[in-house]
Amino acid sequence: MKNPASGRTMPFARLMLITTALAAAVPLKAEASDADVTAAIEEIKAATARYADVNVALAEGYIQDPSGHCVSAAAEGLPAEWGAMGVHYLRPDVIGITAVEPRVYGTGLNTDFLKPSVLLYEPQADGSMKLVGAENVVFEKAWKEAGFRDGPASMGRNWDYMADDPNTPGDEAHGFEPHYDQHVWFVNNPLGQLMPFNPAITCEHFKHAAHTN
Image 1 (cartoon, rainbow, N blue to C red):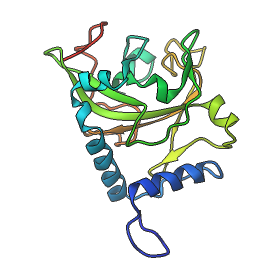
Image 2 (cartoon, rainbow, N blue to C red):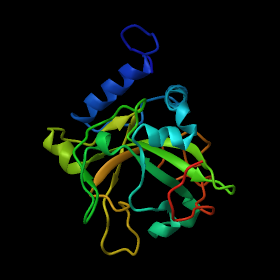
Image 3 (cartoon, rainbow, N blue to C red):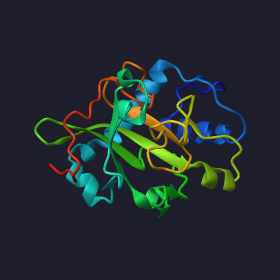
């Protein structure tokens, strides 16, 4: 993103601070260019490269989603052509998890994608897990109690708002209390690199068990 005062490219860390601050005041529209977003994603990808080995993620405090699910659009009652999110590995301390029943809830307010609260993995045919993206999540109640009026925004995009609709068969919030989240895909996503689901991702090889390489 260009700094309008200087015409120079704004560092990603500064971009994150500005977009998060703006989110507290007004909804942020898609102002970041494709090049800005691509550069930001490459920086996030580099910062999380060590987690390509899921055992490194486990050693650093990430745990497999307690629900034990590989999230796919079809399983959530959404159009199957949207694809999947894959298996979520969470940092409970970063999310600030205080409850897992009846739904997961946390008080963390992390918006730093260089230290994401969630890693996304796609199960492979050989039983391994492929790192395909990262995510941050903050719960609506905690975010609003912290004094923020609107949901967070990053890379020129408002985060997705997720809340379960009891009138549908699927669980739009994936076992979580109402929350905001933002996905960042390291692999190509035909729907867009910041969209929640990815048609290129599949849960076909997932087995309901803890995964390590």
